[in-house]
Length: 132
Image (cartoon, rainbow, N blue to C red; front, side, top):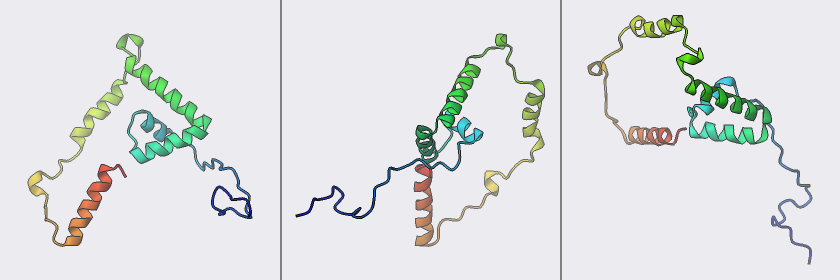
């Protein structure tokens, strides 16, 4: 009898190649900041972690972002780091510059009419709860 292959003979005649990391893109600065701040969905955070296992450059970017975020969290006014007053003025004026949106009484709710509508609502709720 011939020698049994550990994979049940599925790779007979084929040479097994080692799996290589084939990252097309590095993490964007926005993705790095969102990862550090815990703002990514669970799926996106998982992909970022997998990417960083293989990518020293992105791992270093995340480390730098973590250090910068921690430094900002521990800063006081005595350290000389302050939000520019012009930025604060612009941010606070946003609420006054936006028109009022519709109130709850203006929104129309129609209950699902068919079984398919109900399944669709359930499906979307499950996806949202899983962060997808």
